[in-house]
Length: 322
Image (cartoon, rainbow, N blue to C red; front, top):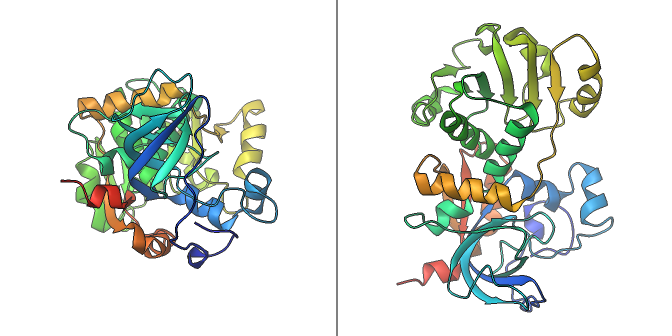
C-alpha cells in the first residue's frame, strides 16, 4: 500500500482492514497480480493529469494493482453471476486492489471465470495488455487480412496485440530488439524485424495500421509505412504529448490518420480474453515473478523499461496452495 505519490519506495507491505463488501460486490482472495505501466503511472502520478482521477494531493486508494486473479471469497447482496470458490480474474483502474490479499470488485466490472488449464499467474497477466490491445483494434477497425505492424512487440500490450492479431487473421509484422527475436517469432507473426540491425521504417509503405505499443516512435517516423488510408495508433502521449492533438486534427486532413484510443472497461472485453485464453490462442508472456514481500523490487524493475511481457506478483494464498 501507499499513502502518497512517489517512487517505488513509497509502497510498503503491511496489514490493512479487509475491504467492506457491499451490494453487487465480489470479494476475491487474490492469488496473483501484476505490476504494470498503468500501475506505475498512477503510483507516481505521471503525467500529473492522473491526479484528476486518482486524487489531487494524495491517492484516494491505498492498495494499488489493476490486475488480479484468485478465488471468490464471498459475494454481496444481489450477486448471482459469481459464487464463492470460483476461480476468477479481472482488471480495474477505479478500485485497484490487486496487490492486496483481498480485493473487493464490482460484479459487473471486468471480471470473469478463469478457464480450466490456465494458472492464476497467466490469468492475472492477461488483462492490462489484452484490453489495451483490443481497444486499439476496435478504434482502428482492424479486419482479417489487413497488414498491421506492431512496434514494441515484447511488452505486455505488444505481446498481447501480436497474439490477438494473429488470432484475428491479420497479416502481422513485429518490431523488437535482437535479444527478443526468437520470443516474438514464437507469438506467430508473419515477419519479425530486428530494429537493431534493420531500419523498420524502410519495411514498405502498405500497412493498414502501425501500432506503437511502447510509445517510442512517432507518427512522422511511421507515416512512410502507411497506406494513404492507413492509421497510426500509440499507447503513449508521444515525446511532446502530440498524439492526442494529432488524433483530433488528422481525421479532418487528407493524410493518414492518428488514433489515440482510451480503452473502455467492459465485461465483453473480459469474455473475449477469457475465450482466447481457453482456446490457447492467447498466453500472456511472463518475464519475472516476485512474492508480495518483494513488491518494491518489482516496481523498480518495471520502471527500468526493460521488462518483457508481464511482471507477476504472487500472494500468500498462491504460495500456500497444496
